[in-house]
Image (cartoon, rainbow, N blue to C red; front, top):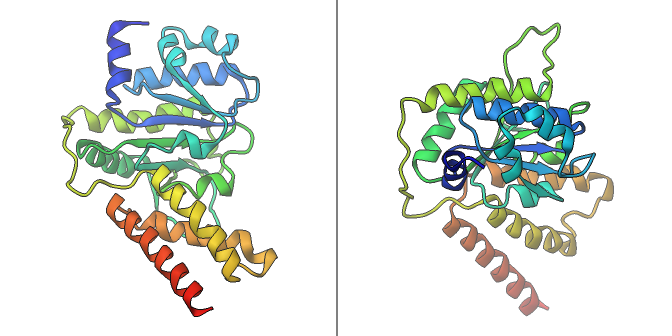
Length: 254
């Protein structure tokens, strides 16, 4: 691995590119090339269809092999984003959920701003054939829609990575990142997921999620509420305390 690229990977200077259920090794390799073109060095792969490592991906990488060598592989999307503070998800279609939708330039501006504050960001890309499922989109803070010809607006995986990655690269040229963190650090996706893993079972026990057929959408709506809030670590800790306090109150009432 090139020492320069190795250092850039270790520095985590830009957003991670997260490929969710990618199907063809060739597409993963082409995505790595697009990443290197745009100064993106952190690839995370969730449940690749053909396993990992993948010879076809390496053959297609053509100079970007170091990105594939350093890529992390995850069994779940939750694990892949656990250390991130902000995530944008690519989608070519409307979703039945309330989430901000921005183009790639607007998202690049926000990610640059967040990165200069020391936050870790990620970009989600779905499987080649079907894109991201709603349960995967729910983990994102914002949706990315590239304004293309409405008659045919689908992109292959590497094209999508290149197009969105270039928006980041163009903006990043004029901005210097810093190691500064705000005094009250933003909660990571892992922090929020940990809270959800406690909250949802308690809501089930209380009967709040009692209608089984409505439960998935109700849980999705609750997740969206907290994702939009951009919670800090302190705020998540406060929410844990609120839940615990309500549980104690419920026990004493009995």
